[in-house]
Length: 254
Image 1 (cartoon, rainbow, N blue to C red):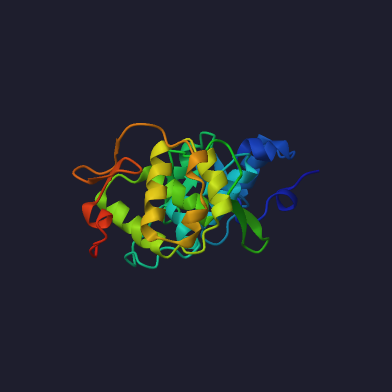
Image 2: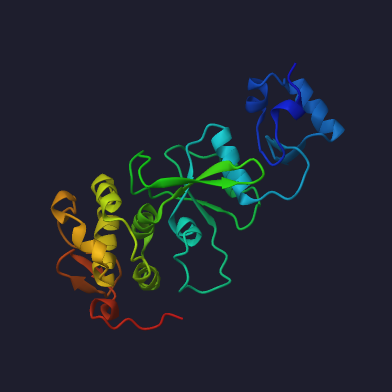
């Protein structure tokens, strides 16, 4: 007979469907809740009482519940060490990507620093450019974007001058990106904006790996795209970018 202790590890979040799939019926769940062996974190979501939850508990629990989810964008870039030039002390929400609709409780659960479910996804449902990072006592695997993928994810959402200047500073420290992986990712990406802006940032940074990317194999679309209002048009990638960066005179943004 299935028991709570044999099926549910401390730190995991599960719902009634998950518990029922392991032989723990609703009446037994109700008993565990009354007895204090199980607690409701949010309506319909349960855990064993224990230490405060960390955001990684939530992400791994989503995979346990059957969701295809990974950590990307600025969260992944921060993990990989590309946020050195940004303001310290800014608490960024955890950026999650998924081809599925994630449950609404993810953005309401109250685990700091909070979650942002990314609505813009610059890639189709592909596993390229991701890695698994172990977390916790049981080394639960949390999927993260590798830096190459995370930079393109970042480029897909940039809308302001300040965001471009921040991305440009991070790109300056990205001398070790792998052109072979970038080639695959750029050919796979469905976001014209992300590809053009990433390539502009890469060319501006002047890293050696940029010369090994074959632009002829990447669909960059047609026509001009406005990234920032009042910017200067880059004639190669046909995007408007901050004039001070285009002219090689970036000023401090802080």
